[in-house]
Amino acid sequence: MESQPSSGELRDELVRRGLPRACIERLLAELDDHFVDLLEERNSPMGAARKLQFEESGTHDLQQRLGEPAHLALFAAEQYHARSFWGRHPVVTFLLAPVPLFVASYIGFGFALSALIYLYMFVMERVLHVALPNVHAYPMLKAVLAGLLGWYISVVPPLAAAVLLCRAYCRNSLRPWWPILGCAILALVAATPEFHYQLTDDPNKSFIMFFGHTFKNSASWILQSYLPRFAVAFGIGILLIKRAQQKSTSNDVTKAGLAIGYGQMDRVVADVNNI
Amino acid sequence: MSKPSNPDFLNGVPELLVLQLLARRAMYGYELVRAIEQSSKQVLEFGEGCIYPVLHRLETDGNLESRRETVGGRNRVVYRVTPSGRKRLRARVAAWRSIVGAVDQVLQGAKHGKPAV
Image (cartoon, rainbow over all chains, first blue to last red; front, side, top):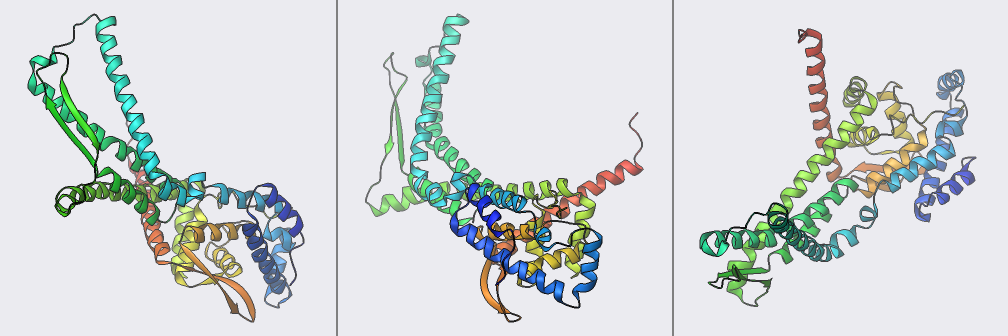
């Protein structure tokens, strides 16, 4: 089969731009096919008018119709590298990363909350010289604070991890079952936390809090406690994925519209519809 | 001078057109380029080879599937839209139409509206 004249140059460009060998070979094979089609078109009687049209516009050369090797290589590399590392390796992102991401999120949000509390205390006591209210005198306030802390620890870290997974999905336009898998793994882990607190009369302590992850091997615990929590966590994940899908579609189409001009593009879509 | 790879064409538009055309029937690359050229009345100019990276990306994303088939006595890679690709196409066309409608409204408002001051 006849191959395009600049095949070697294009191959070198693609290698230089870091495309994998399989991608390069496939692209070159299809370009060779396309080149043969262009040759056949030129030699056919039907191609005469078209040939004349291209000669008039100065683009009679078949290689030029295919595209300059440098431009083609640049575009192919852009399409390939449009995905981030996480997008090119969905198994790592959505199968292996969720649990470490969940742990990292716990650590990150734990430190962030501690830092905020210490900053608040420092500003109030050392900068503004305002005495902090005595929480021990208000058992209801202690209970509300303990409850809020429990929600923060149970909900925010897995939610942040799920948002990051959906962001990776949205940015790399992957198949939707990847983030579904990632969110299911997150929900499996996020459904296990156990949180209890106990108010104390100890003037040095506001409340005693117990927090950890448990998994009991009992059918009643799984049915009554674990499964409902898993369902809620997974449901939130699905909602985030739906939101990411809508955002992804809307962004892509808006960019396309801005790039080409709405009037022209609408005409093109209408013409395509009429084929 | 080489045929320009119109950067506007390369900025997300082909995905919509490729999905729309392939939703009608399965096509190979050359056939698809001719269909785009015909349907756009040559508004969209691009290096024809640029269609393949777009097709490959759409296939990797699960929106297209390809198969080697004999067409007209030659072995060609024929692309067709998957159910996921059809879903994506519907969403993108709907989003496109809503944007066009919104911009049209703004343009009509600018034409008929009275100046604020």
